[in-house]
Length: 373
Image (cartoon, rainbow, N blue to C red; front, side, top):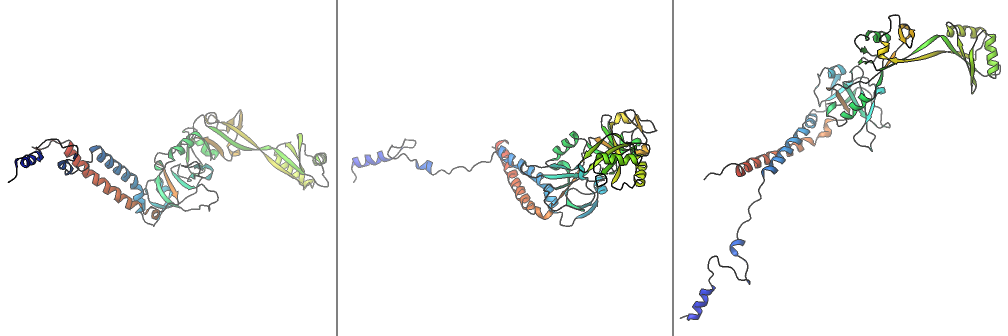
């Protein structure tokens, strides 16, 4: 039979509920047996990932369409693209003539050669070709094969628009088209485009002066210096004006007379001056569109001088063009097979978006909707 002291010791060893644990055994077995609650996906986290998934899906959609276009290129013309008859993000082959004089070099990195963006003739700045910027690469010849995209979707679109607006570029038109544009301010250029000219835009053209010529005398055994050439011209009956210009091996003389080129040429041949030639003289005129459109029907008036329309070959118009908002660009070198990775990435992003959309619904039910009793 156990003694009373042993029974008392057993009673004291039994712990009462809620009683503190002694210092030599601080671990509570009831607490250590509790499971940690699973991590919760908050509404903000789920909504943010769903938003990013949708954003990236929208950004990947053009590349996904182009990747699914296949390797068959569509033979298209500039007129088809201008008329919006070609789907965006398709592989096209465009036959056209780039206006290389209007090429613009641009890029997305400062340490790269960038690209050359060139408008195609007859597109009125609506169809552009994006060519490599490295001059050592093989020349790109038509037809121009590449991906058709809206110009505004390219990263350098704003830069191109700002450059075109800030830098007037010369376009050329015949005299008849210039006169026809006096009333409307719209001139049909030789490139097939239509230029909108403002009163302040600069206009320039060159005209051959029919009553002036330059005689070029090449030194030889008979004419060894300027004086010898001048004497030979005087003997041929050719009267010169001003002081001759002496260069290395040649002397230049100015002549003024009616029908100067034909008259001097005849006299040179009659005098057997075979080492001497005659060149026409070209006069350059500049004015503004506002001043030029006040010209009389008899000819174009520039600074008080009236020039008949027939004497003008082409008229240069320095106009600041604006690129249409629906302009297209053909990116040379892009191929659908280069975008093979877009579809797998799209699937992964879509699955992530669906997963967190489900998590968002659960978070809304858990945190915002009232719980049922």
